[in-house]
Length: 420
Ligand code: EPU
Image 1 (cartoon, helix red, strand yellow):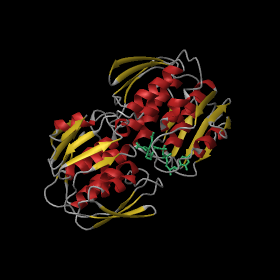
Image 2: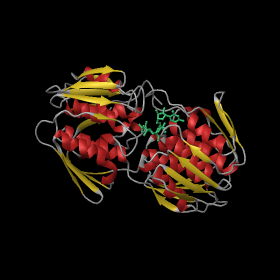
Image 3: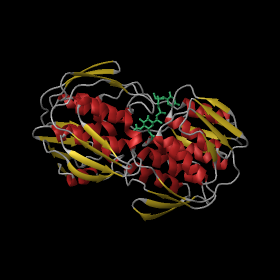
Image 4: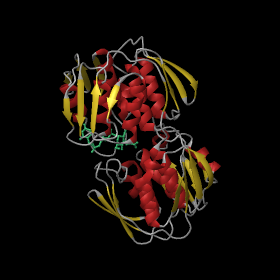
């Protein structure tokens, strides 16, 4: 939560990033997997968790309803969900993050009931959860979502569910609710993001029977018991992409270790098109760049298209590409606040509806800017790393929701960034 004494990032730009960096576990996977652990009948170990405010908040909400949490290290926890004392996680905490909605799916699946305040999260446009509710209802739950509290109750039976739009959160939430339902569930028009596959793999490691995750039809055979396991979260696709873009933006050379290059194909293709160099290895990507970048155009899409979560960092890079780039945001209706801030740094961008035309300038200059959401904050860091002079970024609590020790890790790559 923001405080008046919140520290800020101060960046002196113009230094090429050089060296090696290890990517952390996926934020959006971790929050789903932590909630999914509630479904288990035994203690379960989750490893490779990023130590960020969103995972800490999720664990605190789970602890608040009786899950016993043992931190083995900053990146590993054991969750014992056998003695839950409630099905209504704290309203204040639920409202401050989006992924709190996964607790409803998991509690409904485990205990047949749950209640959660309408979830909060980054302000990037309207974020309905009608598809989650539709899925729970199809499984037989009675859901009341008309008040500030969403309640769901019922003994669940497998069903055929056609998602009206491709939704990451909706697909995962219905999967959570369905994996202990009686009988078979089919989810059509499912999202295919790496987080969906990772969450399904985790559920299967606990004894669930889920097939087809990563395609647009997911089949779930309900099971009556789920057992303990140890599971390591996959690397963060968006952190990997943010670091790739930062390497290109500073005309540096960065090797990102522990990532999954196949998750990065849409970004890699755009970076190559701009004139940056990208080398893929088994679990490593090297990005380097010399000389000016060419303008490119892209639309955000569901996986395997260009991820909306990288649209903002990528548009920072485009502010100095030669020519005019066109960026169309098709997933969220208000995800261009970062461009308003970057205009203070000399960026030229013209927004009409969901499309931004970015005219490349020679250099950005440092300015005092504010993060409006997590990925806007990441974009401002990249802009600051590119700019002449000093950039001051406020509202960094948004950035700390999703990037672990980002200042320290960028400093190890040579960036002049401090938090004070
Ligand atoms: N949508 C509906 N109804 C629903 C659910 C979604 O109309 O019931 C619409 C949304 O309004 C949006 C689109 O479907 O236009 C996609 O939304 P989705 O449900 O996929 O997004 P989400 O689950 O709210 C997750 C990530 C976001 C990421 C999106 C898209 C988490 C906690 N959040 O959000 O991550 O942008 O998927 O990939 O997993 C971030 O990390 O910065 C972030 C915002």
